[in-house]
Amino acid sequence: MMIKSSVVILIGILSIQQSLDAFKIRSLNSRPKLESRAIQHFGINCLLNRYLQHEFELGMEYLNASIYMRHDRVALHGFGKMFKKFWQTQVNHVEKISDYIVHRGGSLETPSYRFYNTLNQFDYFANESSIVRKFLNAEKRLNRYLLELHQATSQNRTEIYCVQKYNERLRGFYELPSENDVYSAHFLDENLVSHKVHRIKYMADLFRKIIRFDQHPGNVAGVSHNLNQIGIHLLDKELDEKF
Image (cartoon, rainbow, N blue to C red; front, top):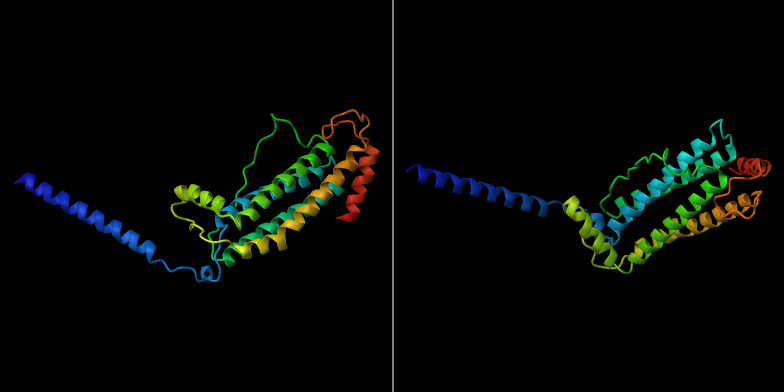
């Protein structure tokens, strides 16, 4: 008799569990779809969130550099103002991308920044040439991500891989793309692509100006530590007036 009762109770528990699972599935499927998704297919939602994170991280690095340059032990306020301006530009890009994702009815991940302790590592703030070279390489790397993102608007294989990878952790946060996304390609062209070209050119020119002040021309470009401080002072004054 006790065995029968236990079986009945077990069957009852399983039935309740199945009912709850079915209710969860119905709840997920019955969620109202965002109407803005019906305007035009959004094909780079996952990848655009990844790019948003890269933009945010670079912005925080610019902010760190700006603070460092304005310390009294460095006192290069022109460089500090320049990096602060670049930080504000990165923040503006983050806002534009966030607004665009919401406008398209996409899923938005809030970007985050992880502080890396560099006390026991190579100090890339060692001198002006090393820090500008660091940001030149960072801008080139970000531009590569941007071009890959632009390519994904017409070839959604990369977006599908991104969705599958992150949906395992985020439990269905993204929808699988099924079409090309011409509208996103236009957004990237209008707001990001040309800006990155100009930023890379500007940083490359600035780096070249700095290493002209190297008092030992045989040094490897980008790691010189014997810069003419009068030249750096004049360049800093030029940046102070510009920014």
